[in-house]
Length: 325
Length: 231
Image (tube, rainbow over all chains, first blue to last red; front, side, top):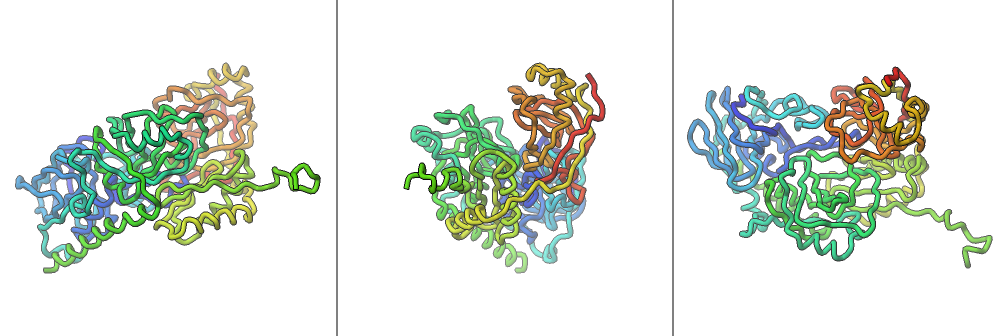
């Protein structure tokens, strides 16, 4: 069991999402940075989709009620375990009574705390992810709050072995994945259904603008400001399914990127869709950060997943080996 | 041959194909050509039924005269996949609205149907007439989307169409029976909502613990029954 000592707002239990229930209106939810969550689980020998805590408001503190292995991944942050500083992208064994304190990230937006055996909350419609709007999944369908006590599952067999090691984060390990010196996040997208309805001038504007993720950006979506994208003639779209990463343009002209908690349906013209290989990078963009888009082909988008999958596979292999040394 | 000649096929008989587009590498949107009607919707249901059993299709997500296929892995050949969808579209008979009939007792007007006077004013009909027309309608669930258990219903009488609000109600209660443009629906969650509340029904539209969490499913029929009128 772990006990939450401090959790400001909107920190939730997430796994890799709830798939297969979109058809009854249930959005996927799931970690905004799925690579960080999967990596944290790999460090511990868990399944990739074991449930952890997505921490996006700080400071966050918890107390371990029993000896527990855990890992911290995601945003680059400062944390302490039992008062001693702990590095990000690291796993450790905590002793009963130890307090883990996680401070505001220096870079990135979301820290993931994973635990050997995963958080043992009930699966709802196949997933432990919190669906905040509908109020189910995670812990009673809500954000974590002080005093919550959350059960941890049975750790994998080798959990009794060696811990206290780390991994290079993916934005360091994968070439080109890190932010450039100017701090602008370059995100690769594929053109989507209504791209051609925008004039050439509007298309050029989409690619050339450094879009700012406004303060109204959250797990539901990133609202972008910077310029306006308008259609020569407004069109009426029928409600249709959308996925995380789709870039929609409402009539007011400021794009919205749908994220993990987005509705299952949308009706605005779709300019583009963020490629799967870059969704986790976007998931670490904090409100106020700047984003530019780059056009890639379907083939390039598919190929871009290989370095991400290779990264996770080699991290898991190295962690499995290390625990058995 | 000119199409004016009697032997030429009618232009209207040349069937249009659906529009197919990608939303990233893991989703493909198939949009029916033509108007929003139950014939095209029925063909979408049939296509969704067929596609949902294909390997690599995680889910076929039905929309309003469209379906989004969500893939487990990026399809190897999207051109061939698109071609087989078009072929299937022309070959498949559409599915009728053959689902269950759901009867929803509504308390029309009153505290939770707070937009009824505005709908009456906009349509130029007395409130009782709005209620009569709404409750006599025969509605079809086209799709369940937007929020868990929310059904997009087809069949609202044009006499009681009412534009969505420019400023949404901040917290509309789950169960609110609403009109938005040419559609009607039952709010599944308590949340901000831009549709016009004309009544309320004490029916759980969605319960994740039920074997079938969503009360409404595509192809179901819905009848609203007058439980009480509060004017």
